[in-house]
Amino acid sequence: MTCYHSPMPDLFDNIGYTFAFICGLLAVHLLMSRASNRVPAWILGSTFALLAVHAIFITIVITQGRSNAPTLIVMLVPVLALCIGPLFYSYFRLIAEPTPRFSVTQLIHCLPALLVSIELGIQKFWIDIDLVIVMSLLTYATLLSVRTRLGRRQFEHLDAHANIAFQWLKAATGILWVSLISEVLINVNLAQGGALKQSPILIFDWIGKLMLIALAILQLLRQPTQFSWLLGPNKSFRQTAINDQQSQQFKHTVAQFEDFVTNQQAYTDASTSLKSIAKQLNIPIRQLSSAINHVYQESFSKRMNRFRVAHAKQLLAEPSPAKLIAVMYDSGFRTKSSFNKEFQAIEGISPSEYRRQVMSNKQV
Image 1 (tube, rainbow, N blue to C red):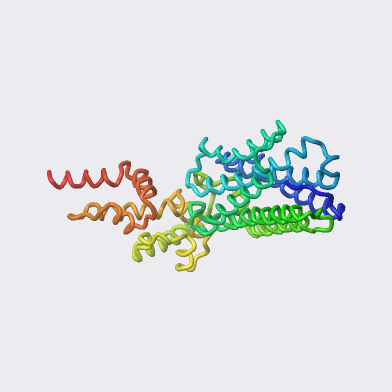
Image 2 (cartoon, rainbow, N blue to C red):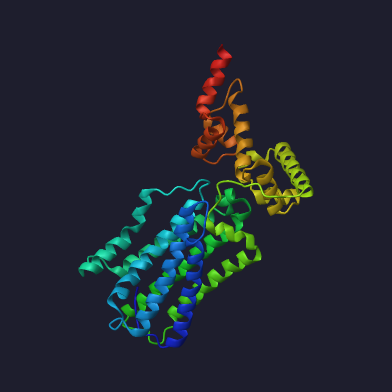
C-alpha cells in the first residue's frame, strides 16, 4: 500500500485508530463466538481482524514515515491489503450455500498475497506490488458487486436474516470499492510527482469505510437478535419454549402459508421468496419465518423445495413425461444442480432414477 507523510496527523490518527477499534471489536466478537458453523464465523472474524491490523499499520507507517517505521510493519501493509478482498469474497460465497463447506481449492485466492510476501522477503521485485493490489481490489470488488446483483434471494435459506446478510454484503462491496478508488488516486498522484502532502485521500478512505460499517451495524441494532447472523447460518432449528397462544398463532400462520403456496402454486415461480409471500399474506416476515421453523423444524427454502420436488414427481409420473430440464423449470428450480441436489436429498434418488422407476412400474 502506498505510503506518505500526513499533513493532518492528529485527525488521521484519530480516524485510523477509530476504524481499527471498531473492526477489532467485530473481530473479537466473531472469533470468540460459539457459532454452529465455525468456518464462516472465523473467516469474517479474520477479515475484520486484518482490517483492524492493516489500519493500525498504515497509520504507523504514514505518521512515522516509511523510512522510520519498523521494516516488518512496512512489509505487512501490502500483504494484508491483498488478503481482505479474498476473505470477504470467501465468506459471502460460503454463506450463500445452505450447507457451507470450505474447499482447499479456495486457498488459490491467497496466491497474490503469498507472491508479494516472497518478493518482499527476498527483496527481488518481479511484479509491481501497487498494481497487484489495485487488480486484487478490482477483482474482488467486482465479484462482490456481481453477488449484490443476485439480490437477497441468494441468502433465502437464512430466512429472516437474509435481508441483514444482504446489507452486510453491500457494505463489504462498498469497502472494497472505496479502497480501490483510494489506491488508484494515490498511485496516480505519485506517478505525477505529487507527494500528497495536502491530500485528504486517506481521510476519505477511512471515513468512507467507517460510514459503511456504521450503517451495517445500525441495521443490526434495529433488530438485535440478528447479531446471530454474523456467527454463520444455523444448520438446525432448536425448539424454543413458547406458550399455547404462540403455538396456535404459528399453526394458523403456517396454515395460511400452506393454502397460499398450494392454491397459487407459488413454488413453481423460482423468484418466490419469504418476503414476497409474507407481503401477499400481510404477515411480518419474521413471524412467517419463525412459524415455519417452529412447526416444520426446517427453513422456508427447504419447505419450498419440498413443494417443488412433490410437483416434479407428479410431472415425472405423467404418461408422457417432459424432459428433465422442462420439469426442472416447471417445478421452480433455477439450475440443474440444485434440482438434482434437492430431489436426491428429499427422495433419496435422482430425478432420472425416479422416472426410470416410475416407467418400469408401469410396464409391469
